[in-house]
Image (cartoon, one colour):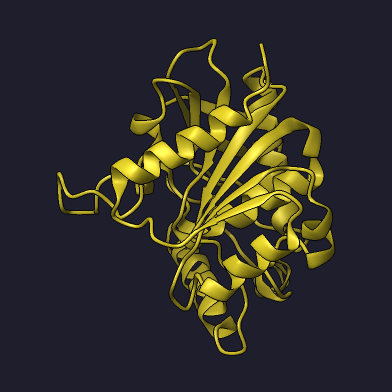
Length: 252
């Protein structure tokens, strides 16, 4: 897979599937801090067994130029970890990849943490996002912050074991920027109330992906569709996502 090399020793692995002249769709994978492109596909260690969600790399690449990536310090992507890192660090990488590929405007689709990446991209560069699909969006409840903090610390521990230098100060500051806030962590409710990007929300139903968070995003956003029954319904979900993206694809 190709690698985008950025200054400061940042390397982002990505892949582009589908017609080069089709409208782009950038993917932000599920997996928490281990957000890697392969998590769109088959279950780990179970060849031929699909995830409950669609794999846009194969199921949408006949109509869109589907761009998938491993986020920084996940999978084959890497970079330094500093005390100033946060959601904006990932948005910088995502915009750099779009720039390198010559993409001025794209659809975005995120699963799990990828939904918050997608909202952060909409916040930073709204004119560059034609529409966004939020699958299983993460968000805060009175009882689940500990889950996100533990997931982050497990990821940081794994990086140290693989030789990445992370100071305790950097880990704490980075974790607080990622998961110390509220709502969906990457953006606030005020942004979602004014979000100019049409949203398709595929609601989650567990501690990391609370149904109430998906419902609140849909209630706040000016242009949003909410779907409850989608997991495991590949054909119906692929068609729903395709219809939504097609409806919001700018005219050539």
